[in-house]
Length: 198
Image 1 (cartoon, rainbow, N blue to C red):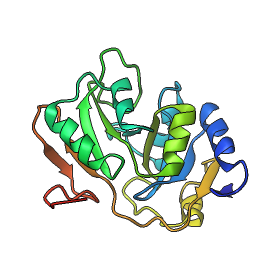
Image 2: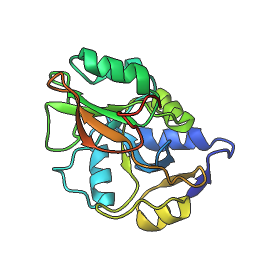
Image 3: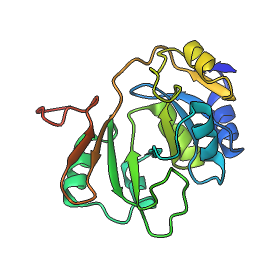
Image 4: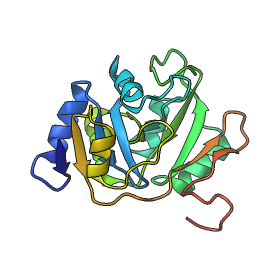
């Protein structure tokens, strides 16, 4: 079901679906993403199934506020703290050491987690209401992400709600690994870490 984000009660319906373990599609500051409640057992399995994504490709997590990173990680090295200060909210995913005994099924890796605070009022509102969201691009694995809600609904027919936020055709987030204390770029994207500004 496609629901305009500005429709009355749209975010409440989306939050209720997430709390029920359903996968929904949200417009982010980069591309459309498929999202579930990261902490709800079994929910992430719906993302892997809908995308036909192998479990070896881990899911990142989106948070409402930069400080919410501490719900997920054991430590934020100085290099990561500097990136958070500069880029969050924004299009930068940071891979960090996961908190010990944090029981999240995000993929095969159990010692790290990719975290991002997006510059998306919709996603941040849902994360405030539900908690951190396991979210990745709303496409079949290995295929382009449709830029419209209608295109996403066709690509992922098993998703319960598609929040229509208009055209989302930005570059995906840049992904960096800071688990060693150094910044290692895993994927080039919307955050230009070599530039002088955002």
